[in-house]
Length: 288
Ligand SMILES: Cc1ncc(COP(=O)(O)O)c(C=O)c1O
Image 1 (tube, rainbow, N blue to C red):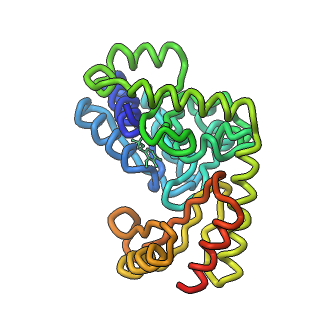
Image 2: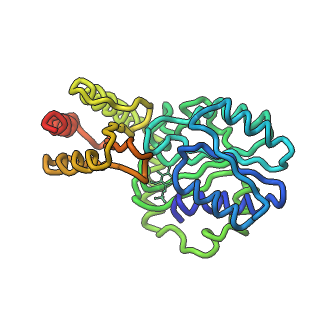
Protein backbone atom coordinates (compact mmCIF):
# COMPACT_ATOMS: atom_id res chain seq x y z
CA UNK A 1 0.00 0.00 0.00
CA UNK A 2 1.19 3.55 -0.80
CA UNK A 3 -0.10 6.79 0.71
CA UNK A 4 -2.16 7.25 -2.46
CA UNK A 5 -3.88 3.97 -1.61
CA UNK A 6 -4.10 4.93 2.07
CA UNK A 7 -6.08 8.09 1.23
CA UNK A 8 -8.36 6.19 -1.13
CA UNK A 9 -8.81 3.46 1.50
CA UNK A 10 -9.69 5.83 4.36
CA UNK A 11 -11.97 8.13 2.38
CA UNK A 12 -13.59 5.43 0.25
CA UNK A 13 -14.28 3.20 3.26
CA UNK A 14 -15.48 5.90 5.68
CA UNK A 15 -17.68 7.59 3.09
CA UNK A 16 -19.21 4.21 2.25
CA UNK A 17 -19.77 3.47 5.94
CA UNK A 18 -21.57 6.79 6.49
CA UNK A 19 -24.75 5.74 4.70
CA UNK A 20 -27.07 8.61 3.84
CA UNK A 21 -25.54 11.07 6.29
CA UNK A 22 -21.83 11.64 5.61
CA UNK A 23 -19.80 14.55 4.24
CA UNK A 24 -16.10 15.00 3.47
CA UNK A 25 -14.82 18.58 3.89
CA UNK A 26 -11.47 19.16 2.20
CA UNK A 27 -8.88 21.96 1.79
CA UNK A 28 -8.76 23.22 -1.80
CA UNK A 29 -4.99 22.57 -2.08
CA UNK A 30 -5.12 19.00 -0.77
CA UNK A 31 -3.06 16.38 -2.57
CA UNK A 32 -4.54 14.69 -5.66
CA UNK A 33 -4.88 11.39 -3.75
CA UNK A 34 -7.24 13.05 -1.24
CA UNK A 35 -9.27 14.55 -4.07
CA UNK A 36 -9.48 11.15 -5.76
CA UNK A 37 -10.25 9.43 -2.43
CA UNK A 38 -13.27 11.72 -2.05
CA UNK A 39 -14.30 11.15 -5.68
CA UNK A 40 -14.13 7.41 -5.01
CA UNK A 41 -16.20 7.77 -1.82
CA UNK A 42 -18.85 9.73 -3.72
CA UNK A 43 -19.04 7.03 -6.38
CA UNK A 44 -19.28 4.15 -3.90
CA UNK A 45 -21.89 5.96 -1.81
CA UNK A 46 -24.00 8.18 -4.05
CA UNK A 47 -25.73 9.69 -0.99
CA UNK A 48 -22.48 10.99 0.47
CA UNK A 49 -21.55 14.65 0.07
CA UNK A 50 -18.36 16.67 -0.22
CA UNK A 51 -17.37 20.31 0.13
CA UNK A 52 -14.10 22.19 -0.39
CA UNK A 53 -12.92 25.07 1.82
CA UNK A 54 -10.59 27.84 0.67
CA UNK A 55 -6.95 27.04 1.33
CA UNK A 56 -6.28 27.20 5.10
CA UNK A 57 -9.31 29.49 5.57
CA UNK A 58 -10.52 28.54 9.03
CA UNK A 59 -13.60 30.77 8.86
CA UNK A 60 -14.65 29.04 5.69
CA UNK A 61 -14.08 25.60 7.29
CA UNK A 62 -16.12 26.64 10.33
CA UNK A 63 -18.96 27.89 8.11
CA UNK A 64 -19.02 24.58 6.21
CA UNK A 65 -19.07 22.62 9.48
CA UNK A 66 -21.94 24.76 10.78
CA UNK A 67 -23.85 24.27 7.52
CA UNK A 68 -23.39 20.49 7.92
CA UNK A 69 -24.79 20.31 11.45
CA UNK A 70 -27.62 18.03 10.34
CA UNK A 71 -25.16 15.52 8.81
CA UNK A 72 -24.25 12.68 11.18
CA UNK A 73 -20.72 11.85 10.00
CA UNK A 74 -18.45 14.78 9.18
CA UNK A 75 -14.94 14.08 7.90
CA UNK A 76 -12.44 16.94 7.73
CA UNK A 77 -9.41 16.13 5.63
CA UNK A 78 -6.21 18.10 5.09
CA UNK A 79 -2.59 17.76 4.11
CA UNK A 80 -0.24 18.46 7.05
CA UNK A 81 2.33 20.11 4.77
CA UNK A 82 0.87 21.23 1.43
CA UNK A 83 3.06 19.51 -1.10
CA UNK A 84 3.31 22.24 -3.73
CA UNK A 85 3.52 25.24 -1.37
CA UNK A 86 5.48 23.93 1.61
CA UNK A 87 3.10 25.72 4.01
CA UNK A 88 1.26 23.86 6.77
CA UNK A 89 -2.29 23.35 7.98
CA UNK A 90 -3.37 25.18 11.15
CA UNK A 91 -3.93 21.88 12.94
CA UNK A 92 -4.45 23.46 16.38
CA UNK A 93 -7.49 25.35 15.07
CA UNK A 94 -8.69 22.45 12.92
CA UNK A 95 -8.60 20.08 15.94
CA UNK A 96 -10.60 22.66 17.92
CA UNK A 97 -13.20 23.02 15.15
CA UNK A 98 -13.50 19.24 14.71
CA UNK A 99 -14.05 18.78 18.46
CA UNK A 100 -16.64 21.57 18.51
CA UNK A 101 -18.55 20.15 15.55
CA UNK A 102 -18.06 16.46 16.27
CA UNK A 103 -16.11 15.87 13.06
CA UNK A 104 -13.47 13.21 12.44
CA UNK A 105 -10.10 14.65 11.38
CA UNK A 106 -7.92 12.95 8.77
CA UNK A 107 -4.42 14.39 8.16
CA UNK A 108 -2.09 13.30 5.36
CA UNK A 109 1.32 14.20 6.80
CA UNK A 110 3.44 12.71 4.02
CA UNK A 111 5.73 15.76 3.97
CA UNK A 112 5.59 16.51 7.70
CA UNK A 113 6.65 13.29 9.44
CA UNK A 114 10.43 13.22 9.84
CA UNK A 115 10.60 16.96 9.12
CA UNK A 116 8.30 19.17 11.23
CA UNK A 117 7.99 19.45 14.99
CA UNK A 118 10.78 19.54 17.59
CA UNK A 119 11.37 15.76 17.31
CA UNK A 120 10.19 15.27 13.72
CA UNK A 121 6.82 13.73 14.60
CA UNK A 122 5.16 15.97 12.07
CA UNK A 123 2.87 18.95 11.72
CA UNK A 124 0.68 17.87 14.66
CA UNK A 125 3.75 18.08 16.92
CA UNK A 126 4.71 21.44 15.37
CA UNK A 127 1.19 22.74 16.16
CA UNK A 128 1.09 21.27 19.70
CA UNK A 129 -1.67 18.73 18.97
CA UNK A 130 0.34 15.52 18.62
CA UNK A 131 -1.90 12.56 19.59
CA UNK A 132 -5.10 14.51 18.91
CA UNK A 133 -5.53 13.62 15.22
CA UNK A 134 -8.18 10.92 14.67
CA UNK A 135 -6.53 9.44 11.61
CA UNK A 136 -3.12 10.04 10.04
CA UNK A 137 -2.03 8.87 6.62
CA UNK A 138 1.48 9.16 5.24
CA UNK A 139 4.08 7.84 2.87
CA UNK A 140 7.20 5.82 3.61
CA UNK A 141 8.69 7.27 0.43
CA UNK A 142 9.89 10.68 1.64
CA UNK A 143 11.64 11.40 4.97
CA UNK A 144 11.23 7.77 6.02
CA UNK A 145 13.41 6.88 3.11
CA UNK A 146 11.99 3.66 1.71
CA UNK A 147 11.00 5.32 -1.60
CA UNK A 148 7.65 3.53 -1.52
CA UNK A 149 4.87 2.41 0.79
CA UNK A 150 2.34 4.19 2.94
CA UNK A 151 0.37 3.85 6.16
CA UNK A 152 -2.79 4.66 8.05
CA UNK A 153 -2.39 5.37 11.79
CA UNK A 154 -5.54 5.57 13.86
CA UNK A 155 -7.57 4.02 16.66
CA UNK A 156 -7.78 0.22 16.83
CA UNK A 157 -11.45 0.47 15.84
CA UNK A 158 -10.82 2.44 12.65
CA UNK A 159 -7.87 0.21 11.70
CA UNK A 160 -10.07 -2.88 12.17
CA UNK A 161 -12.64 -1.31 9.85
CA UNK A 162 -9.87 -0.75 7.27
CA UNK A 163 -8.66 -4.34 7.64
CA UNK A 164 -12.17 -5.66 7.07
CA UNK A 165 -13.50 -3.27 4.45
CA UNK A 166 -10.90 -1.18 2.63
CA UNK A 167 -10.46 -2.48 -0.88
CA UNK A 168 -6.93 -1.10 -1.56
CA UNK A 169 -5.84 -3.02 1.57
CA UNK A 170 -7.81 -6.19 0.84
CA UNK A 171 -7.07 -6.56 -2.85
CA UNK A 172 -3.49 -5.40 -3.22
CA UNK A 173 -0.13 -6.74 -2.09
CA UNK A 174 1.37 -5.54 1.15
CA UNK A 175 4.41 -3.25 1.26
CA UNK A 176 7.47 -5.37 0.31
CA UNK A 177 9.23 -6.64 3.42
CA UNK A 178 12.54 -4.92 2.53
CA UNK A 179 10.73 -1.57 2.31
CA UNK A 180 8.86 -2.21 5.58
CA UNK A 181 12.17 -3.15 7.25
CA UNK A 182 13.90 -0.01 5.97
CA UNK A 183 11.01 2.20 7.12
CA UNK A 184 10.99 0.50 10.52
CA UNK A 185 14.68 1.29 10.91
CA UNK A 186 14.11 4.89 9.78
CA UNK A 187 11.39 5.31 12.44
CA UNK A 188 13.68 3.80 15.08
CA UNK A 189 16.51 6.22 14.15
CA UNK A 190 14.13 9.18 14.11
CA UNK A 191 12.74 8.23 17.52
CA UNK A 192 16.10 7.78 19.22
CA UNK A 193 18.03 10.66 17.70
CA UNK A 194 17.03 14.20 16.81
CA UNK A 195 20.17 15.33 15.06
CA UNK A 196 18.99 14.68 11.50
CA UNK A 197 15.84 16.74 12.03
CA UNK A 198 17.95 19.57 13.46
CA UNK A 199 20.42 19.38 10.61
CA UNK A 200 17.57 19.44 8.09
CA UNK A 201 16.21 22.59 9.74
CA UNK A 202 19.65 24.26 9.55
CA UNK A 203 20.03 23.23 5.90
CA UNK A 204 16.59 24.58 5.00
CA UNK A 205 17.40 27.90 6.68
CA UNK A 206 20.78 28.10 4.92
CA UNK A 207 19.28 27.36 1.51
CA UNK A 208 16.31 29.72 1.90
CA UNK A 209 18.59 32.57 2.99
CA UNK A 210 21.02 31.81 0.15
CA UNK A 211 18.25 31.82 -2.43
CA UNK A 212 16.80 35.06 -1.08
CA UNK A 213 20.19 36.81 -1.10
CA UNK A 214 20.48 35.84 -4.78
CA UNK A 215 17.18 37.52 -5.59
CA UNK A 216 14.87 34.49 -5.65
CA UNK A 217 11.52 34.81 -3.94
CA UNK A 218 10.82 31.66 -1.95
CA UNK A 219 7.48 30.76 -0.40
CA UNK A 220 7.78 30.66 3.39
CA UNK A 221 6.96 27.67 5.57
CA UNK A 222 8.45 25.40 8.24
CA UNK A 223 8.87 22.38 5.93
CA UNK A 224 11.73 21.28 3.69
CA UNK A 225 9.77 22.20 0.56
CA UNK A 226 10.98 25.51 -0.84
CA UNK A 227 9.01 26.61 -3.88
CA UNK A 228 10.14 29.43 -6.16
CA UNK A 229 7.26 30.76 -8.26
CA UNK A 230 8.23 31.52 -11.87
CA UNK A 231 4.79 31.90 -13.50
CA UNK A 232 4.83 30.26 -16.92
CA UNK A 233 5.17 26.47 -17.15
CA UNK A 234 7.75 26.77 -19.96
CA UNK A 235 9.89 29.02 -17.74
CA UNK A 236 9.84 26.51 -14.85
CA UNK A 237 10.70 23.59 -17.15
CA UNK A 238 13.54 25.56 -18.84
CA UNK A 239 14.94 26.59 -15.43
CA UNK A 240 14.82 22.99 -14.22
CA UNK A 241 16.63 21.80 -17.37
CA UNK A 242 19.31 24.48 -17.02
CA UNK A 243 19.86 23.60 -13.34
CA UNK A 244 20.33 19.96 -14.31
CA UNK A 245 22.96 21.02 -16.88
CA UNK A 246 24.64 22.84 -14.00
CA UNK A 247 24.58 19.63 -11.95
CA UNK A 248 21.60 20.33 -9.69
CA UNK A 249 18.36 18.33 -9.75
CA UNK A 250 15.36 20.57 -9.02
CA UNK A 251 11.98 19.68 -10.49
CA UNK A 252 9.82 22.28 -12.24
CA UNK A 253 6.06 21.98 -11.88
CA UNK A 254 3.43 23.54 -14.12
CA UNK A 255 -0.25 23.17 -14.91
CA UNK A 256 -2.14 20.88 -14.11
CA UNK A 257 -0.03 19.95 -11.06
CA UNK A 258 -0.27 23.58 -9.86
CA UNK A 259 -2.74 26.30 -10.96
CA UNK A 260 -2.13 27.98 -14.35
CA UNK A 261 0.27 30.95 -14.08
CA UNK A 262 1.94 29.72 -10.88
CA UNK A 263 4.48 27.28 -12.29
CA UNK A 264 7.40 26.82 -9.97
CA UNK A 265 10.66 25.19 -9.11
CA UNK A 266 10.35 23.05 -6.00
CA UNK A 267 13.64 22.92 -4.13
CA UNK A 268 13.78 19.98 -1.71
CA UNK A 269 16.43 20.03 0.94
CA UNK A 270 17.66 16.98 2.83
CA UNK A 271 19.50 16.28 6.07
CA UNK A 272 22.00 14.35 3.94
CA UNK A 273 23.16 17.59 2.27
CA UNK A 274 26.42 19.07 3.49
CA UNK A 275 27.12 22.82 3.29
CA UNK A 276 29.33 22.27 0.23
CA UNK A 277 26.37 20.65 -1.60
CA UNK A 278 24.12 23.57 -0.74
CA UNK A 279 26.81 26.04 -1.85
CA UNK A 280 27.14 24.23 -5.18
CA UNK A 281 23.37 24.39 -5.65
CA UNK A 282 23.36 28.10 -4.78
CA UNK A 283 26.17 28.71 -7.28
CA UNK A 284 24.01 27.06 -9.95
CA UNK A 285 21.09 29.31 -8.97
CA UNK A 286 23.39 32.35 -9.32
CA UNK A 287 24.27 31.27 -12.87
CA UNK A 288 20.61 30.62 -13.61
C1 LIG B 1 0.74 14.85 0.36
C2 LIG B 1 0.95 13.56 -0.37
N1 LIG B 1 0.10 12.54 -0.16
C3 LIG B 1 0.25 11.36 -0.79
C4 LIG B 1 1.28 11.15 -1.69
C5 LIG B 1 1.40 9.82 -2.37
O1 LIG B 1 2.34 9.05 -1.69
P1 LIG B 1 2.78 7.62 -2.24
O2 LIG B 1 3.88 7.87 -3.22
O3 LIG B 1 3.21 6.84 -1.05
O4 LIG B 1 1.58 7.02 -2.91
C6 LIG B 1 2.19 12.18 -1.95
C7 LIG B 1 3.29 11.91 -2.91
O5 LIG B 1 3.84 12.67 -3.60
C8 LIG B 1 2.02 13.42 -1.28
O6 LIG B 1 2.85 14.44 -1.51
